Image (cartoon, rainbow, N blue to C red):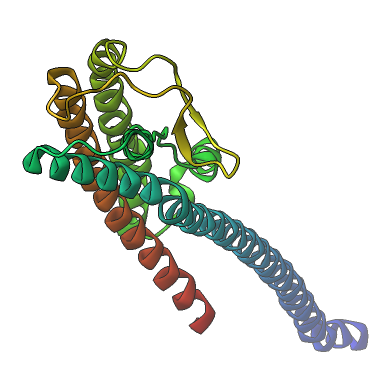
Length: 250
């Protein structure tokens, strides 16, 4: 009988022990789950941070490319357009006055008028961005602008500038051969110069006037297109600068 009552007394203790074991086991499982969730969160955070860092690198590369292109326009393309303009305008003044300049002046002005360039831009950073996925750029407005700038705008302007010029150059060559004895060259300081004196006895020579008019079309087209490129590049650079600045604040 005593043994029977002793078992009855010990039964609640055994049940409490099982309950404690269950609670302990559930606690361990809960801690493991929390640990896994924290590890996943940390991993996601690290991946996001690496993605943002890489995005920043690509944006800085794009910004540098835009600034370099603006520098090239200002220091290489624009001076040549200005030389074209000066050559054309000066020759037209002589035409209007019906005054024949000396041959040294003719060489200098025709050389300036015929100064040429091939427009190009740096698409390397954009191609790098495309190869890694445009979605790397999280700012929708910036991503769309960059995609349109390098995918449509700049290639179109390059086509407008270079093809327009090339088409006119074919016409210009026809007229040039009629009064220029040798090809255009440069002097000792790199300025455009004609190796032979052009066979021009009349400032209103029909062939010369056609060349002047064609080169006038070319430089005006170049000037307008370059102005549009400058505006587009500056806007893109400003948008990137704003995005990078917001990252510093955050």
